[in-house]
Length: 402
View (tube, rainbow, N blue to C red):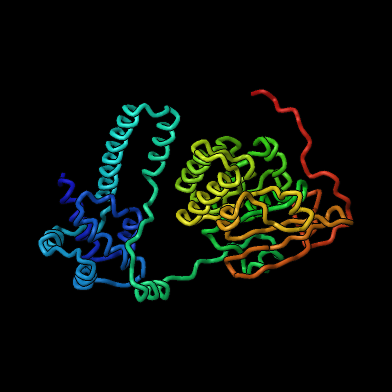
């Protein structure tokens, strides 16, 4: 078997020689840090750049890129180009990734030794180790800065991110076709307004195309399962729709989301609710600031993982009275939201709701529309239903002990 450096040269040589669709798939699996050699990391970074802007490249173009960023080494490039290219590099890519994971595990072992010598709390060490292990398969999203000229070319050669339909016609129309990924969305309203109902409906609809995850901290899993049976027990969407009711600390929330995004390509997440999330590592005494930190960490995850997180929030009495959506912890938590959706009850008709988009970075446009609650199906609809709805929480049932 070739040694590791030779394997890295073969991978790079094979891609430079001919970039096929199969090789492009293998490039997507690799991160810059997977390469042991720093020089090989630089070359691969250049290759990733040209692939990201869908621009054909050859040796001469790659050399110019490396020279531009002062990373060109003639001897390194010569050794790469003299390596025998291969049509199928998947086995070599597997080995490079495997060796990188071993290096990372060695770093983890050393870090744990240091933390033990410093007499760190056991829970802190476990939390660090779990977070580290979760990141072993996660892509590192730290890119080299590029010129604005290159950024414009990249934009012109990349399709604008699609908008995902929520399956609720009035809402999709308000959002000009649906919701974009990479967003933290606050869903606010008073108790019984239908916040959970709306997000469950959206998750069920998008699960037909994308993985969905519901973090149910307000109700146990079985109760949510009973509610979802309203969509039909045999709904095919349920196979792409995941739920958990444990792990409420922000560190556990982040680990759960990262794990399931990596494992099942989750794109939509609902957290019910903001008030149930704890933050054990937060050292301050100010509760609003703690909530702000939680929102900041969730917003960062949305950007890094390319997902939408719907964070259900309970409105303050003043917000309910003034029909506003301002008191979500702090100025920081309010700032971190990319979109804020407010659900208001009608004073006269119990099953009528007003849904307002109060903040919308996606389109910089606010919107208000009317919905009605179908108490039989537990969904929002734009069709007026002459039924008085008194209670939306499912009744408690006896659960058999298995």
